[in-house]
Image (cartoon, rainbow, N blue to C red):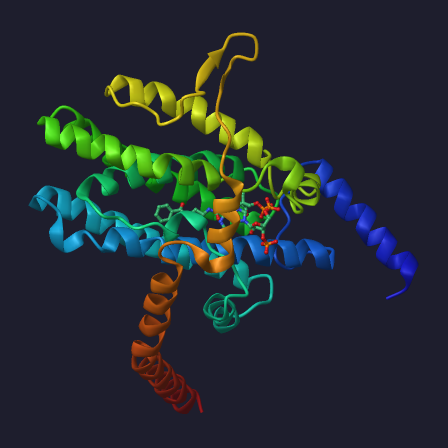
Length: 318
Ligand code: BYC
């Protein structure tokens, strides 16, 4: 293709982005647009799948049948979200196997939050309330993202995340209104999950290498810091309502800004976790790799069945 033709296509593409058109898989797109979407969507998919592990840990120990049913449904939803997202990424020309390989080799990231342990039942409440709460804030913005399959997947995912957030908050509400031991358990979970939840939004804008281009191409509709602030403003009153204390001595409403001011985030901890040195990174990757290996026979059987069916229908046709 001539340079002039490429320039022309680039201009048309930028015009479509400016008009808020959705970009679809077969449309022309700059190579960098394709690559950065594969990066973000596949990492998002990996996060959903790895995110099943800390909660899966509590399915057999949920304190009642009702809690168990809700938790099972939630963990299954996360698996479903992973599958929509892998499918959305596949439309950009990467295979599922390649994405899985990138996760297992450590080339692709997944959300830092899932490298923390879920040690008590209250952690299941805190994950639903805070982690899914943070995920919704990020994902509501992504419903307006420019790539059609990603935006459409987000609409359904957000509806399900909203149920997840409520079931988590309801667990916290119940514990906070329970015995002093139960309330202490809820407070302890909030203490441990608060700061890692703020880190989910990614580094500060000035340290975020991908934000500028992703904002330009409307992959991201809000920056990391904007979404983090929105999460804090929304979540602090929810903590107050159930009489739990957010573990940040610098947290204070700023009348002038119309937002909460908050204390410093430990970015060293964030990068350690992202680079593979968090409390559970090794355990999470081992669980994923062994699930992949142990599931090999299912994939082989499914392929053999599909082959057989295809041959049968070919024979019928001839
Ligand atoms: N953890 O330039 P930046 C869920 C990486 S799952 C790990 O700001 P970007 C749920 C980043 O990838 C929720 N890595 O990046 C499931 C980049 O490295 P690469 C998952 C992080 O992409 C089960 C580098 O740091 N949600 O809802 O512009 C149960 C520089 O960052 C993190 C999504 O994935 C992190 N926290 O912005 C319950 C949402 N933050 O890729 C709940 C979709 C940053 O250059 N993703 N990094 O090697 C996004 O919105 C964006 O990718 C991010 C980061 C805001 C996360």
